[in-house]
Image (cartoon, rainbow, N blue to C red; front, side, top):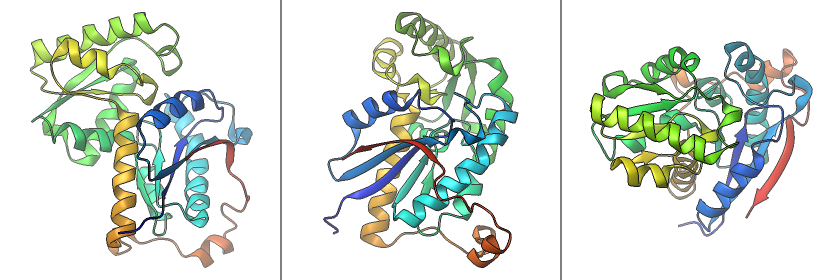
Length: 266
């Protein structure tokens, strides 16, 4: 078994560092001792957006995510987290990750929930999100396990403003999901919903999955499997990567540093 620390990058795919302190708190409290985690956000040249609630914002963030994935792989990271519950550009990023494993919150949370229950409900901020998140759940192959989406009328930037208001809204939606729609586990459908799962779990009496924690732990597991058992991404058939030669020919992702802020938690 390898004694070297696993290197993990946790990317907040926005053009500001407003969530970095939140992720720093989460990672400092939760990471394995043998993990070194780099918390990053995107350079604001793409725009100073603080969330990707809209498809148009997500489209703007995607080139930055791809560029960040390539840069992280070249830096020698073992695993890479795309810190948005839409799982923005997950499959795109995996194409260019070389031997680095790429994970994201929705997929990681569903896998965690289904190891603890037979179905799950997702608590989202705004009804706007449901269509796109439904597509994500379907793409991951878990539609039949979904008990439903339950929105609380809050945007990404609202969750951390008033914790009492947030926990009240999340509690109401979670109880509705469990008692009226037979949900056996709850997934919090936004990485900005960090810090509420413990209280919710006590109240609703079912497992409550924090997507930031789920994706961090999935990345740590993937990094260990890579280091100790050489389990790296497939590059066969649909997993084929574009050649580096072609990327250079097309002059793609040529800028050296796609990152804005960076915080290292060792």
